[in-house]
Length: 265
Length: 257
Image 1 (cartoon, each protein chain N blue to C red):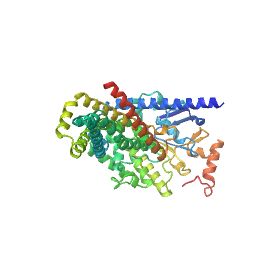
Image 2: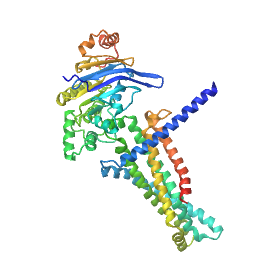
Image 3: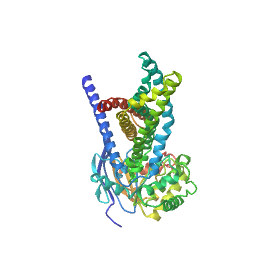
Image 4: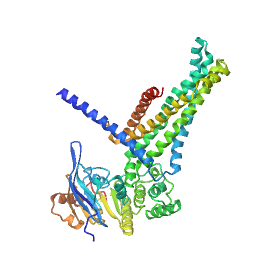
């Protein structure tokens, strides 16, 4: 008996997750198709989203970027000094930022700041019947609400990552060169010498992929809040689904980071 | 009168888990008329409307709108059908991050090619019809319940729909406010001539507006009759409903008006 219930429960759970995954994929396809469908967008819809998702994230990106670069300078200098290769500090900081830390950390920050907001906003729209209202007005929510958010996030992520990288490199410069006394000339020359187009390209691809992951998971979770297994109704439902979306996005970013790296190396 | 119904539900069944909510709904709605669906709370009245709107798919049964099967339509056809609909949701479902003006203007902006000047003209006219002049720049959260419903109604009517659905238009409003909604409803229907489907608890007042009254009881539409016939019907459930809601006004909690 217990075994049967256990089997039944796990089957139920399995079905639930397969359903969820299916919905997410259909959601993504819907958004992609509607993005390219006429009529085209009001520019103001997209610029508003770029402002909310991109511009408003700049402060937190600069702040975290600076400190990430600074700690890289600190750690890098002390480690490299052991081998007598402080001269490589510039390329060490730049490479770790451009290839790895920049895209990942920027994506995690944007998930926390903008992804959670996307999920909560859409979840509330769903729960207060605003999405039903749109559908009844024959306005496709995929196009009207989702597509501008998708475009804005995918557009903003590489730019935010670039800002993160530049600020980080200067953070490393301030700590490594100005505070600890590594050579200024070799900090930048080693960077010019060792950073190749391939590295920047990898960072760029990552930031695009992470941007898509963030907006996809967060928007879909909010959009399907009423299907949540734990009950997606009311304010609590939205808060639960937002937490879940942020966790899921962060995990997916780190997991996909490994696979993208292994593909591009 | 055109005798072909514009909306027809045939044997609609819908359940959630073990609970069977709709057990075979049959209902016809005629053009230009006002059909009121009454019945106890939480028994699936709003669900019927959601089936007609295509927001929910039935477990079995068919929904015909303008003679076409709703569940066999492509997304494009459904969109076209919906463009004839106006909906006033139970909680008005206004876009809470937009002003009153933008809420009412949204269908025009997204669905028509009207210029901003024309849009402003139409929106202001509709808001005037609802006695809402001067609230253009307010947000839904700054409005009273009655005003919110009127904004919802203005938004539902802005594209001159052929069929308007009202999901409990007066629930939660005091007597004066609900009378006001009825007056607005009557005024706009006379002016615009739309077909109305109303889900309501507000018996007997709603009988004044209705051309047909349908009782939902036990997952089935017991009957759909003109108000006079409804009140004298032999159907035991209808009789019970009429007695309960219209008999002992001072002791009945269900009479809000």
